[in-house]
Image (cartoon, rainbow, N blue to C red):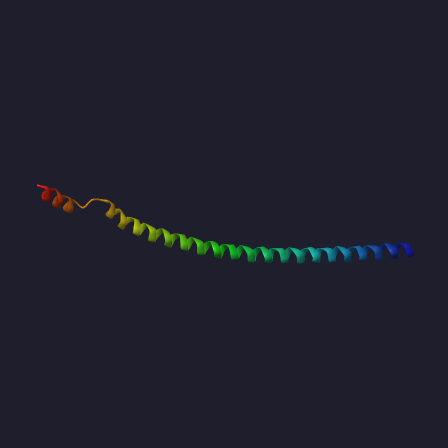
Amino acid sequence: MPGVLLENEKRIETQKVDNEREEGWSFLLDSARGYDQEKLDGWKSDLDNLLVFAALFSAIVTAFTIESYQWLQDDPAQMSVQLLSQI
C-alpha cells in the first residue's frame, strides 16, 4: 500500500505542476496578445492619420498644379496684342 500511495502522490504533484505550467503559459499568451493588440492599434491609428494627410496633401498639390498649368501657356490675347504692336 505505501507504494501505491507514493505513486498517487507523485501523480497528484505532477498534475499540479502541469496545471501551474498551463496557467503560466496561458498568462504569458494573454500578456503577449494584449501587447501585440496595443501595438497593432497604435500602428493602425498612425497609418490612418498618414493616409488622411497624404490625401489632403495630394488634393492641395493637384489644385495648385491645375492653376499653375494655366500660367505656363501663352495668353492668346496678349500674343495678338504683341503681334499687332509690331506692325
